[in-house]
Image 1 (cartoon, one colour):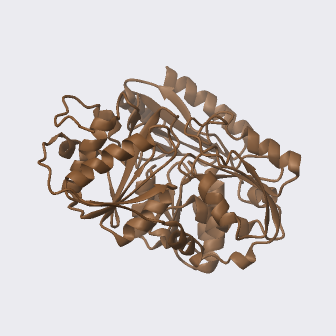
Image 2: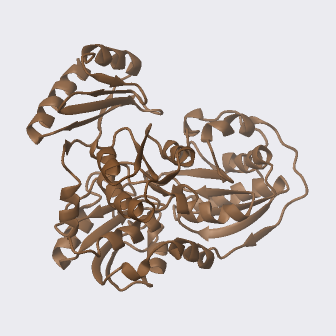
Image 3: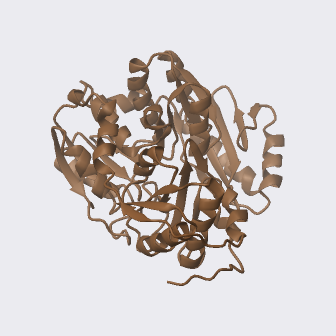
Length: 443
């Protein structure tokens, strides 16, 4: 296929803080993918690049264009095929760099690129200038295929006490994403009774949204857990690097509570280590981490920020409300599959999932509430002024803390949105403060 050598116009908004992500083919198409392949080789100076992709309908076509760009710039490609994103983190360690073609949890019409070189996550924004340059092609590189699974599975199980996983009945909802390929390879090694939902790969995501936090996305797994009288349920996002837990009563578990389940287990195994959490996690997170002898590490929102905080502060684990969980044993990168295995160990104890979750949820907390606002900075400043009697922190937007409640209001990096999180000691106080803040923000 021939590709245009010049790109007259690109949508800069698809070049995110952590990756590249946009609607196909309006924002991200084969022409741009080809140029990104060329630019990635020049930017990283990589000689051999591992490339994987998810099952989205546009992934095969974008893979062909991207790898043509890489090959035409003289670098070799190792094709990993259809894989979850964490396979790229693993495979790229033995080569110069890696690229995963995925839009993660975004709707079916999106696609994107996650890029890594060594310990460095290549930011989407860093590729804007390189992709606009004109490159002369070199002697074409070589393409090979590589079976990443044997080595990857050995890596995943290396630091897991799998003998502690007891016979459990477990519902797993892959959402027609890459967990449908990865989960069977993991779970077949374990003494589990698995009820699989939506394991068939389908880039149209017919069963539910690839975003587990989307409205209605968790209903199927909740229903199956109750109907089958299962011990727990799990659901993954499109590229399987995010995971959420459902307890035996069919209740959805917040990501920051799941982080605590993981942290307790890992701090028993690695005493005194750091656990990174972002600023919108419950205040129970640092409280329990300290209680268990660990070191809480607060970060701005964003998996890259959590990852870097782990590296800088001797962290063993990092996590977010969004369901991203990163592990030192996984090169400080996200792993939905390692999180799954550790949670199965934790749930193999004497207490049921709902009991464990209740013990770690002492406060009433809201999900993020979004407000469409053009003048984000102006509204933020007014809220800072109105709530100046509280203890303020400006790490990510503004966090204001009072004796029995707190809130965070932060701007979206890519949309005209302000995102509000509120937590209080009681449900009634939470509802009161949400109503008060909503009124103040809208006014």
